[in-house]
Amino acid sequence: MHFNSKKTSMTQDIIENAIKPDKRYWNGKVPTLQVEFHKEISYQLTLQKHLLEILWLSKKYPNSGSIKRALTDFYKRLDSIEKIEHDTLPLISILTDIVSNNPNTIPIGIAVMSRVLSKGELINIDGEIEEIVQRISRKLEGTPDMNFLQIWLQRLSLTSNSEVKW
Image (cartoon, rainbow, N blue to C red; front, side, top):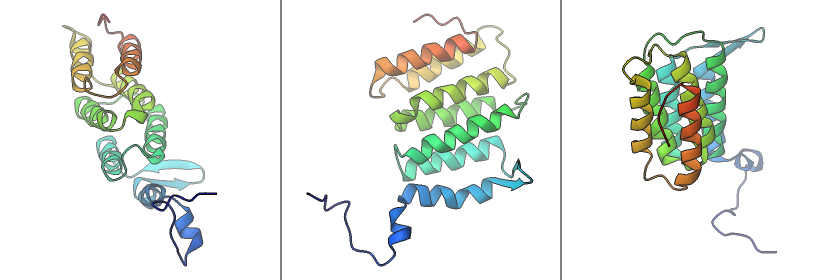
């Protein structure tokens, strides 16, 4: 049996050190994001501030599983919202930044973008949504695994009724 010396260490607190640092960090943030009362979840932060917390998580712990979990929870939060009245473009920008620096978040990141675009105040007049999808595509051009990303961007353009040709 061989142990990776970078991952193996001596510790007195076995339980706390058994939990990955990104998970400890994010689980410490969750109480500031939401409060659960009688199985009803109430969020204490705006959508934009919630995504900023996820962005900071992604910068502190790149490509961690906690980022995908946080984005999944954000996606579920959007289910309870009928319409996003404002902040659509800043939300898309923050999501694009998260996805561009964390390739393993591409599927859930694009799904969240799609949900934001579908619930946002943008009306697809004069190709507004197409322009946003093209901007996202340009921003993500240097992302590893571009073919995989192209498939998800196609999904984004289809679900947002965009007419971008791939």
